[in-house]
Image (cartoon, rainbow, N blue to C red; front, side, top):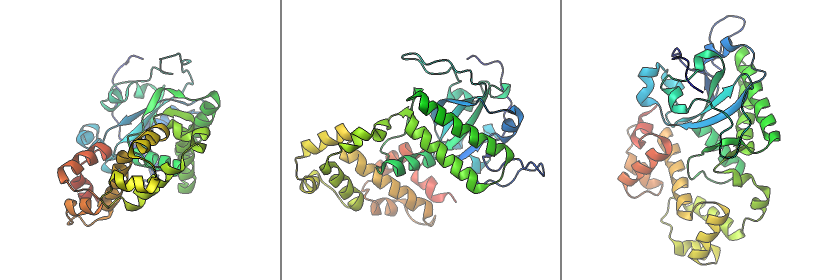
Length: 320
């Protein structure tokens, strides 16, 4: 879809920091997981035909904050997922090798291009950390690489119906405002449906048949890594836990998980480092925290941390 003009740049407000229907004032931000342009949401009116047609992973926006005039609390430092929502329900049927829609690409939307101001589209942000945490909770397995949604988004027509129903319910609630618990519940329901009904690089985790075939030695190795991630772990250690060779362990992980034991170990350590940095005193040393989580080399830790969370460990530590 071509651009018909540059939209006005307007600040994104946290989703439940919405317009109060009784007072006409914007309330304080409460929503834990989403943000949306509240003025645009009120302006578009009817959202009963809304359909999610594209989901893009966007990097952290700290370096673009001033240009976009975004308030700091609306900028997810770890990045976010941008949900392009067609308000007219005019999405094209998906063909083999072709996306379901011609929605503007995420980088065009972030840079102020596309058609946000024209009323056909509205864009909902879901915090990357919130969606990945929901993925981890549903599958009981760490997120070892960024969650990436496929252009041909839906796995089935039933999934399409469920996802769209949940996004419409959330948009309706956000328009009238208030109800923290209701908004949080609708957000969780939407995130669950996105993960279970859409195509992405973790879809196999929701395949019941694949889950039922998960070998016992894979689960044993996973449990050992999670419980001992801060310690040095060798393949000899994993062989002793699983009772099979290193080659067989790697083969089983690739087949049933799609990643290696090493990738799992790094993901567990990064998650622990991230949680520790967020809660730590800013005067603490990054290297001390990294070492306590199992990392021995600060430079390497900083590189993989930034790739995963969109910022350096020192930026997380200093953010309050």
